[in-house]
Length: 263
Length: 294
Image 1 (cartoon, rainbow over the protein chains, first blue to last red):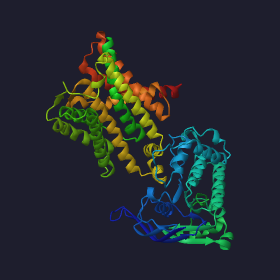
Image 2 (cartoon, each protein chain N blue to C red; image 1 turned 90 degrees about the horizontal axis):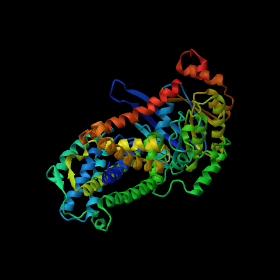
Image 3 (cartoon, helix red, strand yellow; image 1 turned 90 degrees about the vertical axis):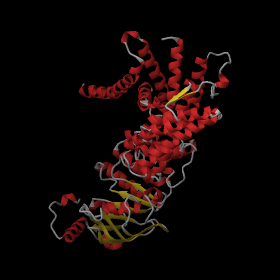
Image 4 (tube, rainbow over the protein chains, first blue to last red; image 1 turned 30 degrees about the horizontal axis):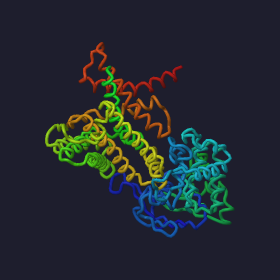
């Protein structure tokens, strides 16, 4: 479960560059719920995700993950509770380390790291099995450098990495945005599969209205640091991309010049 | 080059192999350009020499030199991590401070070890010439150090250290306390350099406050030569490469200095080193450009 209460975040407070990124956001994501998060540029989507992950510290309000209040915890300390996949395929893994070394890093997430070997044989076999599930043929390339993989392959491996340590919360920051359409569809399908299998409490930021409605069980729209739309169940089923775009226009109080930007 | 000069070069290469291992940890693993080395090498030499003169057990004196080096590394790491001073500048500050500290430790610019027992004393006079004993002894220590560092870097903690250097944001997202990794890595790196200083003092019989000048360039030269001779992404191979690089570099310098035709003097050493490192850094770029053009 994720419970965000009265969350406010101000960047550069007290300077001419002061920016109110989030303004009293209340959001509770139930265990196993899959929320898609949309909003225009600067609406605060990534800031909200960053606040849950611990990259951005809350100026006011509180954040609870599972049963634990983590408002003041730095990112590394929250890592045991939260798995993440970034937008940039290069950001979520180490290009200079091998695939299996990346997996070993992720498998120890939230655990104390000691001086025992990072890649004992049994763990290697387990990684091989997990990577084989992807059906990308990467199971025979575990010793290859991560940097040799394509963006899509890297995101697929990053998703596996996110599921290795057994945490319940998954944060996805436009993780398909940098991929070609074919690979994006594959990674999204993989996301939905893992989410369903492991019943992960998921928060996914996306720019694509289509994706926001197709994936997940609930859709939240942010605008200027506030939640302006929160739909699930039957109400959400009846929504189309056009409805979302209309709502976007309404909250912005102006006609968007190019709908294509949102689709 | 005489046989004695050759083994002398090998010995010096093996002593500086510890610097190369330390530089590899800082520059390559942590991606932390650390110039503290120029101060922590003579710090190790000074600490061990002074303790030896006071009759301390040579192994204990050597361990103290490593500890002193580790503290120097932690000071640099603190300036960078805790107080956000640019890593390069933080290390230059520590290096500058260490010059004065080294003078304080020794009480004078240099200390000679004439009759004091060193860690090598038990191995002298066993019928083997001293100029074999010294490199053999250093070689054994280097093998142990490489094995330990390789084991460390392949452990879960070491893997987290490599991730800290390669992609700190990702490392934090995986729960790695990157600040702690930098402290430990810098301490380890400079402890190895302190050990190099202690060995230098005990094999050469003196500690000198100026002996640290250019240490970082020599260490970097060894790492780069090693990477050229043994290109591999496996850490163990890279560590062995750094050791081989250090020895090859010393032999190359010895050859250059002993070839009278070139007319180089011992005092040209730092110039030769800097030019060699610059060439080693420029060559791969030129090669890449050549490939792109063809």
